[in-house]
Length: 116
Length: 113
Image: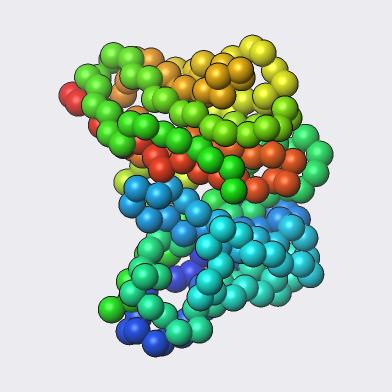
């Protein structure tokens, strides 16, 4: 099925461990995004990539790094996980520019990450 | 970041009845887009309805409709004839020409049988 694929779906890390969340889309979208969802705070933008070859910080970038590997793939890395990074992480993609851009994003199914 | 406020953390509605979720936002821009997303227990984010700020007519998608009041910066969602499958968290979201979505904190809707 076409869409946004995130892996893994669940992960438990120990404080200080590192990991990479993977995201791939097959809709030929230009832009990709990483959000985190926490209770009572909605979804907050961590990083985004407006187009292949570019990445920019969002609202809550501290403790994270990203890589836009190609047009399809956008990964999120936690170098040294902290309990405050316990959250649900969503990857999303969208068209950039033109009328289709105004139809919002297509989201992956999320990754529930627990840091103990 | 743009501010999106959903003042109702939880709402409960009887099956077949109507529920209205409120959303306000803050911007000085005149051209933007507003969305409602549904997140059922499966965690998937599903687009429910969207509204362009330059359109005065309120958007409607089957049982879902919005009341867009641009001057008041208000964007409420009405769910008519509520069904058990409407039980979910609903997020209001805002997007300007930078294509970044800003979300409210969400409203949990429970439909009672």
